[in-house]
Image 1 (cartoon, rainbow, N blue to C red):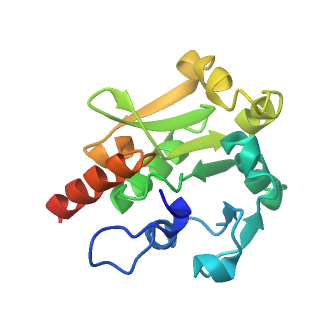
Image 2: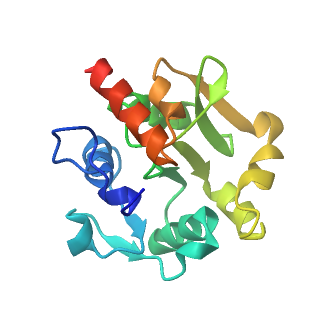
Image 3: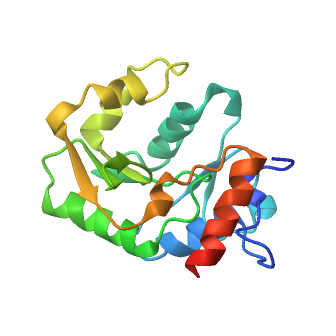
Length: 182
């Protein structure tokens, strides 16, 4: 990408970075928010606590567990917003949080657009315990795939849950789509 994804600009002409956008759209959704990053808060230009990821090469699951450990006691669920999915609408996050409150007996809540799952997701405390047993090299995928009907799907109209910015080409496409959405 030429820079850390967190520091990529949302679209042409915008001063808002991916991480600043996520900070903005999650504001007020929960009393506990934090960022897991190898960059310091001063580099990210955010007001949230930053949990330093000293080994980013260990992957997303390592970062997820670091974030969870930051809060430890008293947290029943955690919403995981990936930095490379910054275009998700706030209403999607609000609806996903409401879904987890309305149906608390699930282990995971995921949005879907036209029957395709995306991000962000919410994990229950019990799910976090399962994720700890997953090898970091495999990430969360094997545990998530084993959930079956313990995963709650929320149909939404937000195509951006699928917009994963992993390459410069995909970044250009997502910026274009975001600009068209207005």
